Length: 590
Image (cartoon, rainbow, N blue to C red; front, side, top):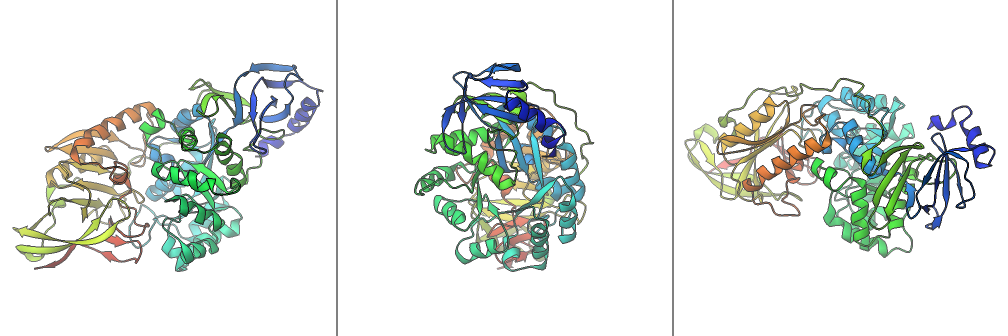
């Protein structure tokens, strides 16, 4: 923020506001979206450098180096994405900026949790360095849960209180990223007490992840010092989180929640100032075709939220939450982050300004993006090739007959179950309707021995899928029934230095290489989106997908061990509620 206080800048802005000096840019004829008052009012806007110097009656000033007539348009603050993982879009930050700035997003709050889980402090430092000097303002948070569930999974690093303290000393770090280890917070583990305590002591943000918490557990989680949550599951959950004093980052990645959330907000007498908007996770094809923040706002308006309220949540409310008094409002003394809209209800973006400079027009960047200032981290696949035998579950002592299996039911809101299976030549035959989920440690901190779990409720599979985008430790995860297809998919990803692959009939059907941390590509977003779209098309016939839960996105979240219930990780079949770890899906031979 200190650039706004550069010697002479404020002096120039004051003189321009008083008519003693001309504006550098004067935007005339537009309707101001005033998110402070809720008004839509005619106003002209004068800019000096990165500052808004004046918001004044239309036609009252004509003195400017550059004039821009936006008659018939609406002028709103630049959009602020209050919580996201750039890695979910599978592109580097500069490619992400190229894509979302023309859509009206000028600030994002990035939790580089994924690169942190792969590379530790080195990954977070890379995130900071690669986020510099872009037309998109990137506020970087310190990942709090590396891994997300200690003792239940093994990531590429492990952060304790001392690592959090070090990151919070870095001036670029805006606070503690989403605290996902809910059990550790509530049970007052020393590990989580240290991490949250360092955040509170720093005076910076302490962000949360309160999925499924209600009643006394929700109250305890907030009492621990957690300030926000984006894991909203329903309208009732949204209201409970707001009433608990949390800032809610209402996310667009779970569209089925949004209609109920909008209806719940209508029951309140006033729109909450502690409601912000975020994307959280957006796949590259959706980012290109539908958009990021702008798409979330469009959907909220379609579901009945007033456009000014939606913009307020995505601007002023977010700026207040982030402690950024220079952002979120079109007013004198604020930063010149502006979005010119041709249609308010449809949120049609025509122009975008960042720090007083036009950076995009009609869907295209109007400024050059600099090359990455630091080397891209590659070579993170620390494991050898796999064989079909790695994806076979063997009974103890090559026992033939039958066995009992512990299984994981459902793609979301997982539950424990048991199933009977036959054994022939010492190899367990999967029950009908079940599939294997194998997780292989890839970070070089433990043997790369596949752990096999058995999933039910995932339909009947006719091929295999492998990915290193696997929340949150991002080990190699492989789904399927046929060991040959599973090995083919796994080896394709290993040889690509990370990414995603679909296999069927013993051959690779589609491959998306993601060689940066095994998570990202530096290709243009449109190219990554096209490759990802082709991969999803190849995956269509291998399973019977059933929205909203059995969808493609479920495969990248299936190993999220911090969430309640059972999940398969590189340590075995784990329980995020009890902390139990079972090294094998086998219960007993019969």
